[in-house]
Image 1 (cartoon, rainbow, N blue to C red):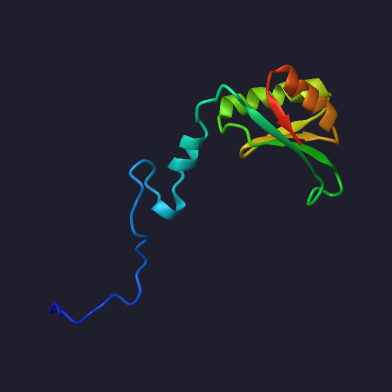
Image 2 (image 1 turned 180 degrees about the horizontal axis):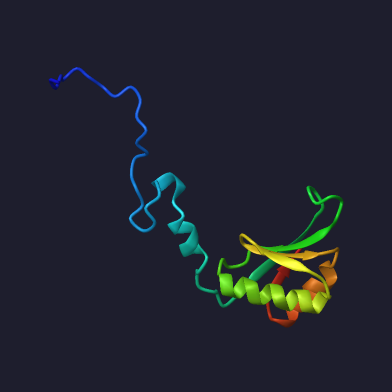
Amino acid sequence: MSERSNTRIVYSTGTGGVCPGCGWPQRDCKFSSQRAANEPIPTRIVAKLRMEKKGRGGKTVTVVYGLPRNEAFLKALCGELKRACGTGGAVVDDGVEVQGELRDRVRDALTKKGYVVKG
């Protein structure tokens, strides 16, 4: 096959590069999201509260968001909030979900820990 100077690629399955950390294509890199899961904890933490009901079968949850994306920190905070509220909960991307409409209890628990609470 001869090389021609007037040829161009019409379609390619190439993705434009591979992440050196995880081996996935750069657009679907899993390495950067894992790195963000261990970001340092700032000295002043601002926690934001909101209530969600949509997509949960009518059940209400209290969501604490805007927290540092540190896995150990979020897991410990989730456990403390669940004990303080006497209910279940889970760790999500950058926050914690607590089952029920417990904004006041969550706000009290967070202010006792010295966090700034909004919402």
